[in-house]
Length: 428
Image (tube, rainbow, N blue to C red; front, side):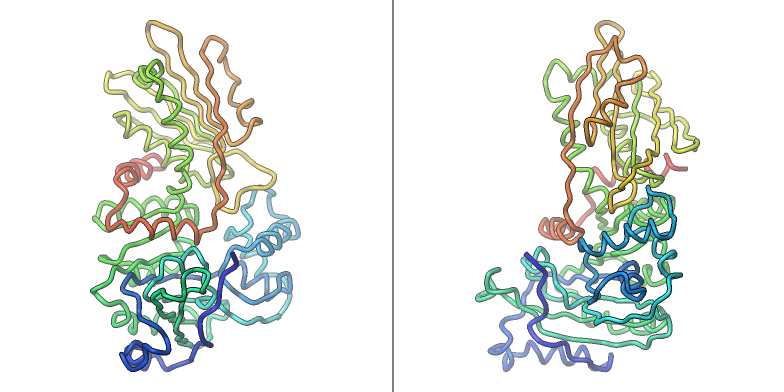
């Protein structure tokens, strides 16, 4: 189902007038025309959409600007990778693509519907208030503040559903910073407030700090931005006790579930105590997801990190099992001709278990059969081989966020909380 627009054309107001207008919008006198205000949650979204803005400006993509990861956007970004002579393994929405497209000629413009273009996966949860911060590529653009009522479509239950409202703050970085003062009265303490940082983690650090303080619950994507800063921020927020969710971790679910099922048969469980080697392959040069999976395995099996080192195209580390036996780990960056939209996604995993008495086991998980064949090399003939192809999910970020919000978690996933600090240490 396609995203929907707001119930009414957004009204542009002075920032100081926004809280009072919204209070009046949901007064008893107005409820007959706009419905009942939902008593659910508030979602604040940092929505830069830099690639989309630059592609539209350069005439390589038609408007409007929506902030959605649409198929035309991804196709235009992949073409820009070719035209800018970037490595073919560059993810289409990567920061290097944005910088390259910024140098392309063109001054096209389009309507900016960020914050008004609402994904049905999110609207189905009936949020009370959606607040979108929409920075513009024109750093000097003054602040615009837009407000509108919003209700789910009738086919989504809109006839009886509670409604909400949207607030959009649009402008250059400086203008947005000045406009943040209106947010506090718009996020009532009686409702949980989530902040979805839908951009690179290392951009606008001061704005991020102001927006994402506890008790607000934070949603990030450690596939976006410098890997060290991504994992370090995740570690700090986890250790501070703030509720934090990582979309990059969420995408690992099928890998974790498949690996758990492989070792579910009783005759294979003992092999978990005899693992001597772990190899992980990821797309390109963003290791965060692979390190999170390695950290989850190490934590679940009680391994202790002894040392870690950066090597060409990857990371190596040495763990010790609880019985003192060493486990070697290697993460390798694998070039791909058409990489995933999300940088550094898992490609393959190999676990080798070598008990003192009995036949060794080699477990290979892979995104496709070609990866399985590559991981089979290296003296596997004397090991019992078990292979599984992991189904790759292609959910949009909005669907992933909706899955998180639907769970209503008020704390960090305990598995992620245990893995995040170790993943940061692995990267060094």
